[in-house]
Image (cartoon, rainbow, N blue to C red):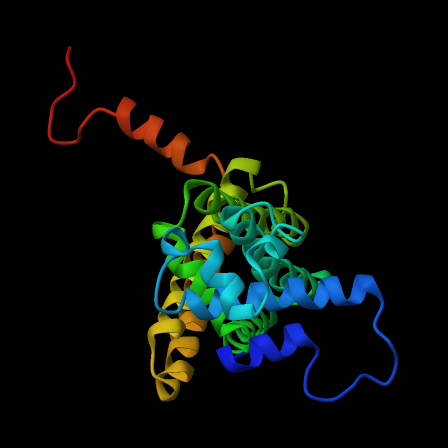
Length: 242
C-alpha cells in the first residue's frame, strides 16, 4: 500500500460505509494503517531510525493515538514480524500435511515462498532489513520465527522419513539447511529484477532437490561409526608392530 492510501484507510476511505463501523472495527483499521505506514516508511530507513511522530503523521492521527494500539515503535516492529510469518508458516504446513512426495514438497514449498514474497513484498523486505539492522528485540523475534519454521519442518520431516535411520538431532540439521536455503532464496527474490525471479525459483528447486537426494541416503550414526573405525585402523602403508 502506498503512502497516500494509508491515511485514507485510517480515515475510512473516500466512500461512506454501507453500515456504521463498530468501535472494534475502527480500531483494527487504524492499527492496520499504522502497520502499513511503518512498512512504507521503512522502505527508506530502518525501524531504529523511525519516530512515533513520523508514523502518526503518515497515518493522519495524533501521536497519543498511537499508544492505543502499540506500546512503542519496538512493539510495533514485533507485531510486524508476527504478521509477516504467521500466514507463511501456515501455508508451508499445509503443503506437508497431505503426505506428498518429496518432489511435490520441493515444488509446492518454493511456489508458496515465491508467491508469498511477491504478495507481501514490503513485509519481507522489512524482515530482511531488520534481521540485521533492527532493534535487539525485533532481531530476536525474527530469529525466533525462523526457528519455529525449522521446528515445524523437523516435526513433519520426522513423519515423512524413516525414524529408524534418523536421529532427532539430524532432523534438526536437515531442517536448518532447508530453511537457510529458503531464507537465501527470499533475499535473492527481494533484490532481483522481476524477470530474474523465475530463474531464482528454479535454482532453489534444484538446490533443495540436491539436499533431499543426499538426505534420503543419510543414516544417522553411520558417519560417526565410520570415523571410529578409521581412527582405530592400522594405516596400510605401515607394517604392524610385532
